[in-house]
Length: 205
Length: 90
Length: 257
Image (cartoon, chains in turn yellow, purple, red):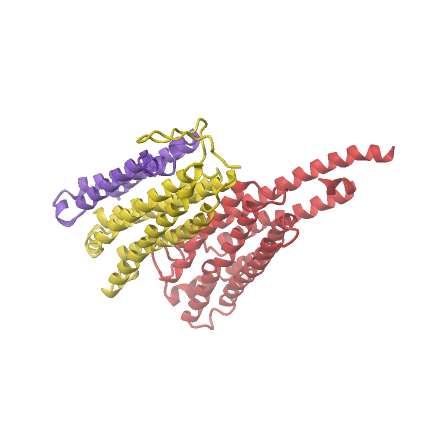
């Protein structure tokens, strides 16, 4: 017994038609975690900008030492990883394309892991240059914000791993699909957070 | 596979990639010159625009019940106000 | 509730009473805690980690009686974590009849959490015992030790919350434990607790033990969680009791006849 078997095969070049009824991705309760997590990070963003205001020159000067290339590449990495996961979710919902899900999910995970690798190199570079979280206030925010985010990336990768396992199921239940969607949304949240963190820390002066 | 890839999500991805490169270029050392305030504001606005795209198209909030979608849309507006406000006034 | 029909009214009432008693320990501990930590000890907002030994020692010396009273109040408050936690663990137990892993996890975490909390105030008590005889840096060390027990040791509490969350979300027993949003709520609160570990790295700013993220976020989140779950337990206990009483009274005439 499979779910969403009635999804029409989209014509080439068009998006699948949206479901007739409004659909909560994952399940309603999950959004407490997603929005809640975003809210906590938002507090951090506001605090960062508040302290930046008190010390604009120090922050602007210290920002120069950050590796913008790594930050930008990481953004591209997460965006691409998210796309692969979006495609994986769509495949999972469709009877005809479900077999593509494992490959897409694994690809999403593989691309996403590059973020961690680049981050490790980036941190190593900073520490080798003598910059640590206690060097000054700016670097405190840099390491804490990116560190907390990196922790979320790691959790997200574990979630993706679970999704890869789930992807093997050729006849998922409604609950399976909801879980898959939910896990995907958590990953997109991780992406979303970086989309704000990167410009805020690396670009805005 | 092709019908899977040629979707709105892929187009959104392309837009996001382009916007990332744009922000990256804007944020580069020389690009600021003396105009770092307007440039920073643009970068912030672009970031909010990007997260809205992610929410609508990747998280599929576009198809979600209005209540959920509106929470997210409101958040985008609030975040824009907060970040711009804090950047300018702090 | 098949169990309810086999019970007398007295038994049902007792079941309700003991669950309510333990659940209400939650709000009581919150009030005692507030009185102790805020009113008497004046530890909210926390003193700055940057304070010298002298300044810290003066905190104890100059408000000695107030400190001591607050510490005693809090010492009693933290003991109530046990019955409060038990009220949730008992309900979890009912959904895990074969392998009560999440129940046992909760009990383990309650035990550890309680010990951490007890030690926290014990150590502050020592700081307030002979403040004149101690070197100021010694007082400050005891002071810091207390704060670290209060904040840094969040992992047992996080695991406690996640155990409840997973128990709710993975519940297949046929009986609802708590609404599913409550499970996600647990996970979010656990996430809010996590940044408390950052207090080790910073003595000033938002991530220090007097900071927005080091102190306020985890503390407010924790007490919000206690209140929300107290409400959930009491609500469920009362609803079940009402249902069971109706079932018993409608069964009795048939039994008597």
